[in-house]
Amino acid sequence: MAFIKSENLVKEYKINVKKKGLLGAINSLLIPEYKIKKAVDNISFSIEKGEMVGFIGPNGAGKSTTVKMLTGILVPSSGEISIGGLSPYKNRKAVASKIGVVFGQRTQLWWDLPVIDTFDLLKFIYKIPDKEYKKNLDMFSELLEIHKFMNQPVRQLSLGQRMRADIAASMLHNPEMVFFDEPTIGLDVVAKERIREFIKYINAEKGTTMLFTTHDMQDIEKTCNRMIIIDNGTIIYDGSIHEIKHRFGNYRIVEVEFQKEYKNLSFAGVKLINSDGNRKKFKVDQTLMQVTNLINELTQKYEVQDITIQEPEIEQIIRDIYQGGICLDKNVC
Amino acid sequence: MIRMYVEIAKKVFQNNIVYRLDYFAGLINALIVILVNISIWKAIYEEEEVLGGIQFRYVITYLILGVLLQTIFMMDEYLIEGKVNSGLVSMDLLKPMNFKAYILSHNIGVLMFRLIMQFTPALIVSMFAFGLLPPFSLLYMFYFIVSVVLGYLVLYNLNFIIWMTSFWFYKTFSLVTIKDAAVTILSGALIPIWFLPEKLVNFIELTPFGSIYYIPISIYLGQVPPNDIILSLIKQAFWIVTLFLLGHILWKSAAKKLVVQGG
Ligand SMILES: Nc1ncnc2c1ncn2[C@@H]1O[C@H](COP(=O)(O)OP(=O)(O)OP(=O)(O)O)[C@@H](O)[C@H]1O
Ligand SMILES: [Mg+2]
Image (tube, rainbow over all chains, first blue to last red; front, side, top):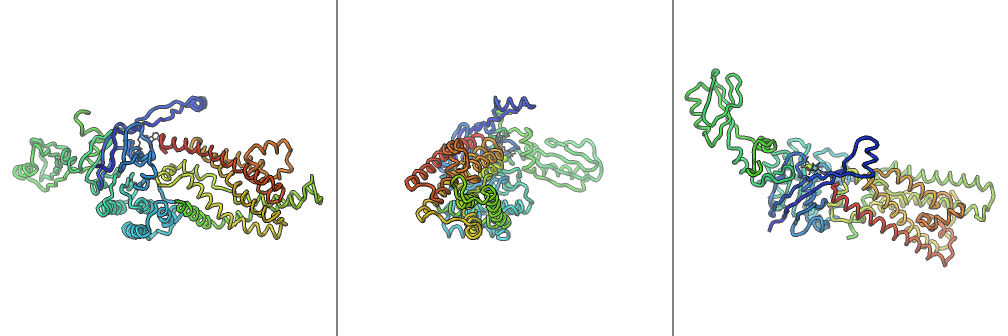
C-alpha cells in the first residue's frame, strides 16, 4: 500500500479584497469582501515507501500549499489525504511524530538557543531513545558538518549553516517521511551539493520516503527518480525524469564552425536556430535525422573546423513546459 | 509526556541567563520601584503611624510584596504575536506537542528565572533594608504561596486571552498596554486596595483583577480571616477556570483559522 495517498485534493483560499482609500478601508472592515483563490485544484497522487519524489512547478503553482496539507497544518477544502493510514490534520500529533518537515523559508530551530539545545529539546519532544539520538546526531553532524557551529545561537548562523541544522533537526527522530519545501533556496553550489548528497544518502541508508519542492532542476536530477510537475494547482506531469527527457528531449543541439561562410544550409529534420558568420547552431530532431548522419553529411560536403553536440538540458525542457511550449497532456492543449 | 515541557522550561531558563544585562536591569528596577513607592507613601503618611486604620508598616509590606510579585508575574507578552506574524506558529504545530502547554512551559521557564535571579535577591534586600514584615503565621505563609500560584495562573490566563487576539489583529501592543494599565490600577499592585473608593473596590471584587495580587498579599498580611481564606482561594480558582475556558475557545478558533487560511 502506498505510504502517502492524496485523492482529489482541493484548496481554496479566501482572500480579503481590500478597497482603496479610507472609506474603502472602513468599508472593508465592516463588510469584508472575499475572493476565492483555488490554489490546489483536484490533485491525486500516491507515493510508495522509500520513494524520493521531486515536486516542481512555477511560482504560485500550489507546491507549498500541497506540502502544508500533507503535513497537517492546512486543511484541504475537499479531498482526502492519508499518511501511513492517518489523516494528517485529524491526527496532527500522531502524524507529526512520523514525519519531518523542512521549510527553506522558515526555521524550526529555537532562534535564541545554540543549535545543540534545539536538538536536545527535540530529543524530548519526539521521545527519541538516547542511543538512537546519539547515533543520528553523530552521523548528521559529520555528514552535514554541523559540529563546527553546534554551540552557536541560531540567529548567528549563515543561511547555509542554518539550513543544514534545520535538515538535521527534521530527521533526528528517524521520521518515516520527510518533506522539504525548497531546502536549497539561496545556497551556494557547494552547499546545495552537500545537501543533495545527504538527502540521497539518508534515503538509501534508512529508506526514508521523501518529497521535495525546488526551483533548481539539478536538485531533482541528482536526487529523484520521479518528478511531479504542478501548474495552476493541477498536476501536469507525474513520471520519471528519464521519460520526460526521452519524450521532450529527443533532439540535440549541434554547433558547427565552418572554414568559410555557407548560405542556405538546409537538411531534413534540422532547424537552423542561430547563425553567426561561420558559426551555425542547428536543432536536430532525432526522430527525423540521426546526428551521426548529419555529421557525416556536413564533413563530407563542407569544410568543417569544429563540431560540438549538446544534449538538451532538463532546465530547458521544464522552461518550455512552464511557458506552454511543450504540451504534456493532449486533452488540455 | 510532562518531560518535554520541563525541558522546554529549563532551556528558556538557561536562555534567560544569557542576557545578563537584562537580568541586572530587572533587579535594580525592582529595588528602585520599591524605594520610590516607599518614599511616596512616607510623604502621604507624614510621620503618622496609622492612616485610615492602616498601619504604615503594613502599607510598606504591601507595596514591597506588590512589586516583588510583579517582577515574577512578568510574562513574555509578544511571544505568540511574534510567532503569528512570522508564520512560525505553523512550525510549532508540526511538532508532536501541545501548543498551549508549550507556551505555558515557556513562561514557567521565565518565571523560574525571575524567581531565583530577581525575586530572591530583591526579597532579601527588602527584608533587611526596607522593613518587610514576616508573614502573619506559618500557616498563612503556606496559604500565601498557594494563593500566589493561583494569582499567577489568573494573570496568565488573562494574558493568554490577549495573546490569542494576535491571530486576528496581528498587532497587540495597544491591547497589552490597556490590559497592563487595568491590571496595575485595579489589581492593587500599585495602590493598596484599602485606599481605593468603596464603589471601585466593589467593582474590582467582581473582576478577576483582585485575584491577581490583592488576595495573596492580604493573606500574607493576615488580613483575611481564617474562615474566608478557602473562599478567597476558590474565588481565584473560579477566575482561573473561567479565563482558561475563554482562552481555550479563542485558541480553538485561532487554530481553526490557521489551518483553514494558512499561516
Ligand atoms: N495563506 C494564503 N492565503 C491566500 N492565498 C494564498 C495563501 N497561501 C498561498 N496562497 C496563494 O495560493 C497560490 C499557491 O501558493 P503556493 O505558496 O502553494 O505556491 P508555490 O507553488 O509554493 O509557489 P513558490 O514556488 O513561489 O513557493 C498562490 O497564488 C498564492 O498567492
Ligand atoms: Mg512555495
